[in-house]
Each structure stands twice: as C-alpha cells, then as structure tokens.
Length: 490
Image (cartoon, rainbow, N blue to C red; front, side, top):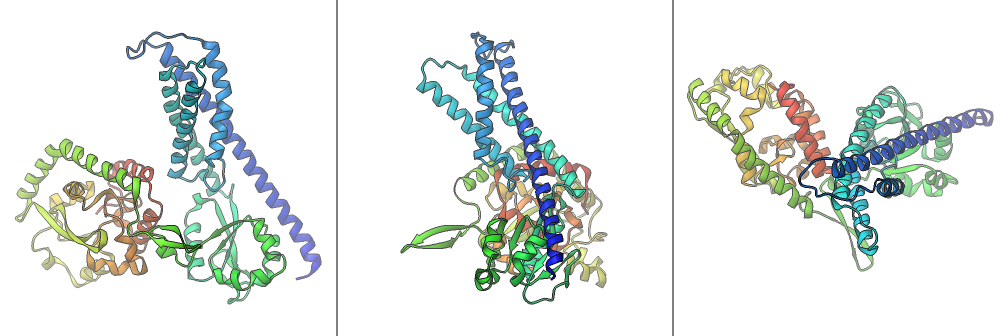
C-alpha cells in the first residue's frame, strides 16, 4: 500500500471519524437538554399538585414558591450529574432499551435519597415530603417518556444511515460472523460493520454482504486508521494473544477504540458468571441458574401475583371457553403437553384443547415432514373450529397460568418446548433449562408462529442473556398489542 495513498485516505478517515464524534456530542447535548426540561417540569408539576390542588390527602402547607423555584434550579444540575454517574450519557447505554429505564429509575431514586438525607443533616432545610415524592415519580415518568421518544428518533436516523458506529470485527470465525449477522439484522443498534481482520482469509474476500476481509492482523493499525473505525469487536482472542501484542502500534490503536470482547465461551456465559478469587487467582464460576438473588425473588413475586390476579379476573372467560371446547368436538377440555422445564425436568403444560383427538390421521406425509422441521403447520387440518379462534387470540394458553402458580413456568421466558425439540437448540440447549419457560416472551412479540427454529433460538438466548424485570414488563406490555391484533398466530 503506497504511502501517497495512505496520506490521502487516512486524513479523510480521521476527519469523518471526528465528524461522527461531533455529531454524537450534539446528540448528547440535546438529550441532556431534554432531560433538564423534563426534570424542571416534574418538579414544577409536583409543586402544582402538592400546593395548588384540592386533594384531601395533602394538608395545607407553606407555598414558598421562591424557595421551591430556587431549589429546583439547584437540583437540576445535581440530577444531571447523577445521570452521568449512572452512564445515562454513555454511548454504550443511551438508546439501549430497557436497561436505560432501569438506570434512569435508579438515578432518580438516588437523587431522592440524597435530598432526604440532606433534610436530616440540615434541620433548617424543610421540604414537603409529598412534593419530593411527587417530584421523584413525575421525573421518572417524564424523563422516561422523553427518552422513549428520543430513542425512536435515534432508531429512525440509524435506519437511514445516521448516528452509526463504525465497527471492525477481529476474526472471521463462526463467532465473528454470528455477531456481525446479528448486528446487521438490527439496524436500530446503530452499528455499521466495516469488515473483518483475519489471518486465514485473503483480503477482499466477502464474508458477509458489505463486510469483506480488510486484511491480516499484521496490518491492524493501518486498517483501523484507514477505515476510520470507532470500535473493534474481538471474536478471535488468539489473534490478540499471539499476534497483536507483537505488532508495533497495535495496542496503542486498541486503546483509542471502544473495544468489545465476544468471548469464545459465549454459550457458557449465557447462563451468567461470577468472579471468585481463590488463592489470589481470579476465577469465573458458572451460575447453576441464570436468574438469582433479588432478581429471582422479584420475578417470582410478579409471576405468582400476576397469575393469581389473571386467573381471578379471567375466570368467566375460562369457563365460557371450556364449554365451547366441549361442545365443538369430542375429547378432553384441557390438553396436557409434556415439556422441558428448569434443570431439564419435564412437566405437563396445560392448554385448552384445539385439535381433534384423532388429528394425526388427518396429516399427509408432506405435512408430517413440515411439522418435524418447523414445529408448526400453517394450515393444520388437526385444528378444530374453536381451536383456530383460540390459537389466533392465544386464549388456548391461558390454563398455563396454573403452571405459573405451581412454579413450573413464568409469565415471561423462553418458549416452552418438548424434549424432542431440544435438538434444534444445539450447543445452546443447556442454557435453555436455566430459566423457566414463559407464557409469553420475545418470540411472542417478534413473529410468534412465523418464526423458524433458528430465530426462536436466537430470541430465547437473547432473553436469557439480557434478563431484567424491566424487560419482562416491556414484553408483557408488547404482548397485549400482539395478541389483540392476532399477528403471526396460526
């Protein structure tokens, strides 16, 4: 590669990289300005509700509008500072989904605690507790709504080629290709894959559409500067351990980038790990179950309480459906499906029967083959008239609320499968049994029966890796809309 070419290309790449960073700074300024307005609005609305409303839960208090105005002006930068501590302006977390809302909630809660502690330490600082609690709740809601809208704008810009992070993947092995495919398939992630660095394939080889081999690891520093990369994902750790450390300037180039590691033990890390020191040696220990501690307690409470309330409220519907199933075709009202649960233990999942009891005799050889490969038939002759309606509305799965109450299932989780279907999960199968299967999940809001096994595996593994109570609540919210429209059900 000629020096004249590099003298032309590298400055242009640096200029483009600087322009992207400048654009990102403006985005952060706009987001912070929106946050500040929402915080001010939350405090102001809290003042109106506390001191200027006729709610009987509040006793008459000193209006002190000047005091609360000054206090609000002082608290806004403090709140923004706490947001910074919680990395709400960090590129790796902003516009990042449910985790962003969790950080927002925790940041606002910390601000509330700091102010409350200050009132104890400073006796002369008298603040209405109701105003403070209202300000906390309204701030969470208003900033959350603003962030939701800002994220939608960012997603739109990313789908149109704006606000993208330019990424090089180190290693064109199976894991590197899998990471690239997932990022390319998710334009909202804001990643543009420039290509791969690999020592085993010739430069120019097209690994994926628009993602060629850029060169070997020996040219790492030059490639990074030439392409103007913002980030590197290391998929082949051997290249770093064996080659990059000996290449002059490579480590310095890594320090200037955002470096992410796609570990070779990715399928093991899905179940969660903890760092434990033994004999001064840091060791990674694998969790026996993916969801532990307070997360497990919180999820259990949501599952049991939610299932109980749902059964209570839906009992008239369940009774009517039971009668319709009985009148529609001969056979039991409830069908028991033997599925795999936590720890590879099997149990009977309850569903309203939607098929004829002699349904297997109605299948053709081609339909049997499709059923074996896909797990579903689009035009299934075994399904009854009432069964089609129940499947389209997902009402047939409501009896699984009993499984949730019994602790065999969760309201949200991976899709329940039989022991025979485990083969479709390949090396991921041991991760699937670390969490309870769900009444709904990412598969439910991402296509339902339109999804093949490969997509189901990907979505289930994403849920297991990224579990949070916020994600569960988001999935429940999205499920309601999907079920009402009947999209993807058959």
